[in-house]
Length: 215
Image: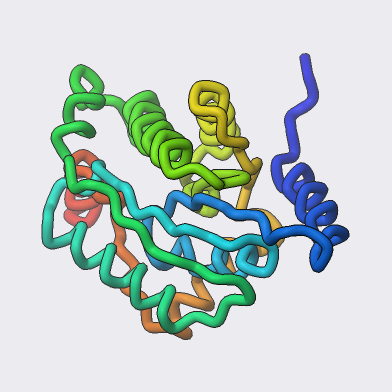
C-alpha cells in the first residue's frame, strides 16, 4: 500500500522554493477558490506572502440567494480589511444552484462527507480550474476547502489534480487545517467579526443541522 501523502509537506516544499526566488522573479499568481470568509482568513494570511491572489467565490451548493450574498459580502469585506503583502483581488462566479442540484441528483440521501460532497467538490474545483485557464497567467490554483476538519483533503487534492490535468493550470497541494490552520481561522474570524455559518450551504446540510438541533 502506498504511503499516505502529506499535502502540507508538499506545499511547504513549494513555498520554500518560491521564497528562494523572491526578488529575482515575478511574483507568482494563484487562483484561489474560496468557500467563505472564515475559511479564507487563514489561507489569505498564509499565502499572500508568496502569491498575488485572485480570490474566486464560486459555490453553487449555496442554494439560498440571501445566504450566498451574505457570504460573498463577508469575503469581500475580509479582503478589504486584512493586510496582505501581495495584492488580493476578488472575483465572483455565477449564482447557479441548479448546477449543484443536478450534480446531487440521485445522491440526496448520501451521508454528509460522502459521494454527494465529492460531486460538489468536483463541480467547484473544475469550474475554478476552467476560469483560471480561461483568464490565463496563473501559476497555480487551489481551494480553501481543505481547512475544514470535516472535509476530505485527500479527495479534494485528487480532484484538484484531475482538474489541473484537464485545464492545464497547476494544482497547489494543500491541507490547510494542518499547522494550526483551522484554529487560526477561528481566531481571525473573531478578530474581524466574520459571519461563521453553521452549515455548508446546501439544502441537505441545512436539513441535517435542523434535525440535529431538535434532538
